[in-house]
Image (cartoon, rainbow, N blue to C red):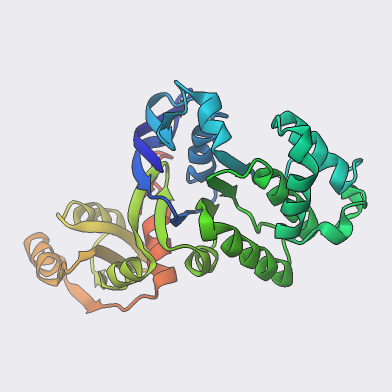
Length: 316
């Protein structure tokens, strides 16, 4: 249903997307998970035709979003992070305005609006001004406008941001019901948000995909990531540089005043390599032990960058 291949997006000297490739099958609910500024919104804006890619391709329902933008957009319902509503309109009048923009026939417009309001639970507030609604209800109105033309694909950017816990639960339930017969991509920087809704998760950081799997597979892979804690009697900068050069090291971060946490790929036990490095450099080993991390902690390890001495960001 959705296919993205070698997607790059640059804004001047800044690379927002760096060789992003993934696919979403019909009927899937896929989550884009990553910290703020990771590139999630940029991916969605390219898919919906709001931004052109610098290079690479994005296809929606078989249509290239650059070569056939109108055909692609007709298949998409899009809810951006900032809900596109007009506070001075009533819910019903706003949805009629959107229906006109979507060129929904007058003969079926009222039925389409009523069905969407019923789906997202806003029928009882149809005559209220949008500006007088709670944020949770405004979010539902945003979902309704994305559904008016009955799209095959829903693209939802941070759909629960800023909501209180009760509203979050309600919106999640609405999304799960809407996804029964649609393909859904939603973005979030909140791990539980994605894990409770999505059947597959794509973790993106600094414009790159760093992990992709089903929830169960991702948990198994990430929880099985080899993590070591080491304290070597040597200058921290020298130790970090040497450890990061070891094949298989995914990250190395300072931990406390003297320690370093090392994350390696699944099944990689680096204790022998680290001990050998210390021996070769004649750095006394004060501590070397494996560490067990939670899924949340490993996510942070995958998506945390630190600043190097020259001011550039480096993957931890």
